[in-house]
Image 1 (cartoon, rainbow, N blue to C red):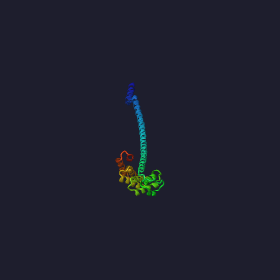
Image 2 (cartoon, rainbow, N blue to C red; image 1 turned 120 degrees about the horizontal axis):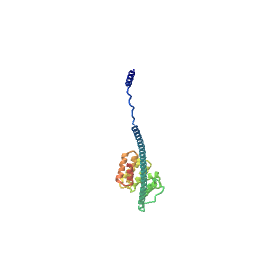
Image 3 (cartoon, helix red, strand yellow; image 1 turned 90 degrees about the vertical axis):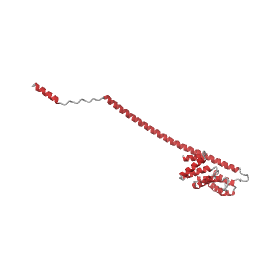
Image 4 (spheres, rainbow, N blue to C red; image 1 turned 120 degrees about the vertical axis):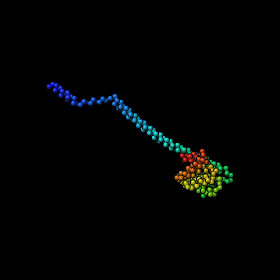
Length: 243
């Protein structure tokens, strides 16, 4: 009887499935993986922060470059305006010196408040002096324009005629009469190649073309000024507009 019970117990025990062994976890390897991921995340955050800083720095540099360019342009424009003022003053002195060196009997004292219609009663030198004073000293531009027109009509072969055309063009340009002003400057540039005002007349033709939207013609005049009068104030201004 004891043998039967023992045999039965052995059979039951053999019929049970063998239990799978419990998995073994390497705690050290798991810790190293977590630490590596943390370091990668930290490096990515640092790179993103660095990229953002570099972007902000580049934007700041770009803004500074734009401001420097604007300041440089303003400085060049102011320098040109000063040079233009000095050049006009120098030309005015030259004109007055030529008038003073004229023969004593030729020059009469011009009337300080004569209108444009009174120019016809003056001598050649007086007529030009009168028109010039109206434009530069008294700043009576509305009277100076007909005064220069009258002078050109009455003295077309005068040594002052080229200057009269230039000043007439300048007055018309200041008043926005661009078409007629361009004609005056073109007369100086084309008919008076030895005039001291030819370079400025070419430049003014370029500026007028630029204001009228004719960029190709404007660039042609600017390049001509630079080619023929390199180093002059007019050439510097022409180069600025080309740039």
